[in-house]
Length: 90
Image 1: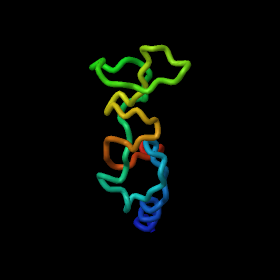
Image 2: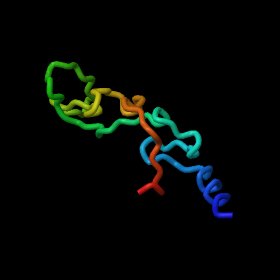
Image 3: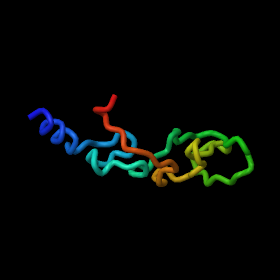
């Protein structure tokens, strides 16, 4: 009975708190979750040499990108892969 309960809990569908996808424990692999480990920021990039497409209301120094990989699209596919992490796993 206890083993059956653990099996049911194991296959319970969860939501990943990094990529927001649904998954089960049996489908969770080391490359299941793609995410950005850093924030999407609005500031000058450290190298100061890259071109950034600014909106008309942006100040001239504004640069918008993921701090981890430099991707400038807020919807860019994550630059890091790992296991999904559930809100229940904390």
